[in-house]
Image (cartoon, rainbow, N blue to C red; front, side, top):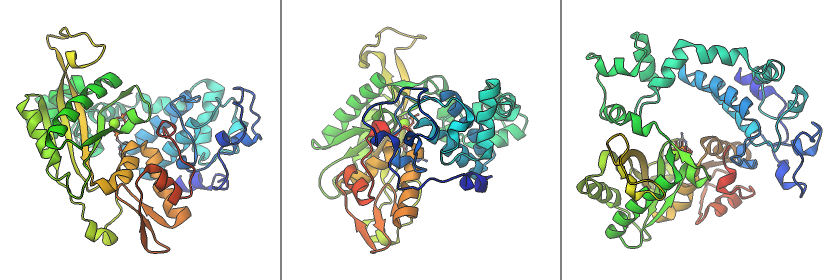
Length: 398
Ligand code: DCT
Ligand code: MG
């Protein structure tokens, strides 16, 4: 399957993306499939993907299939469908018929079949089948709990469990600390977090962190930095100028949240980042910076535009918050990595590796040709090193 996805008809990777060509926006429906507008790169980091998705029906369908493959840990097909969905998200117009997709990269035969079904019947039988599949539906519910991944969800499914209440009542199941918190605050943290709530959390963290070090800067990253109005959590980067000045920052923030009585859960991970070992450092998915995964109590009155009165007998909401504190000189790499989207990050790294013989991750950019680390103060510096046009955060919704 993965092979067939790749075999498709890859366009030259160095072609300019559609948005940089003509100066006027095309009329939806008016784009012929052989138009240069449809010159789309196979790399998300060479496309500009805003939140305005003209092909949501198609991308939702493809993402259901991707998720289903993720649940059975079939990574190749999962990434194939995610990549195809990502290509469609970048298009400036809705696709109208099957011939429109001929020139698009990353669309394998299975993706094309799904799209054809939707064009012809209004839905895809393959997708409908997954949506009604008991296993898919159960894993979807179980993995919606903080701390529960596909492996655990699958284990519970195999035990015959189908509903969340069954998990909490089953005495033979041992939940780890994260999952206990996940169940405890399920109702709140499964609700989307609004931009106003994210900003309120930002003010709380900023005030606390500033008493640790007055020079601290805190940056909202993740989906909110890409312009989303809602997210599943709030991601912040905290930095302090000066070598090693961020040491102890997050433990201090956590202590202060606890003494204010608003810390509901915390998982602190000490930094394992070591500059002197960087040349031998493995380039991997999760970074080595000091970080913590939290659940905090956000009072209604702290949120702009929100009624201060009680909802469900409470005047607060539990919110998932991630804090990362990289050393100041790693800031640009950490910011780029934590801004997402996941698909955009995946393709930045893939592009660096395959097209530039470089290795990129949240810590550094290494040029394998010259055996040197490339320094960067800003995200723009990193795009320049990679020979890529700068893509604004709000254009990284790949
Ligand atoms: N990230 C990544 N690779 C992963 C997971 C995350 O590069 N495997 C990056 C991209 C986004 C950022 O970290 C924050 O992750 P999330 O909060 O999961 O994503 P988000 O885009 O902020 O989504 P949401 O709006 O739902 O929080
Ligand atoms: Mg997020």
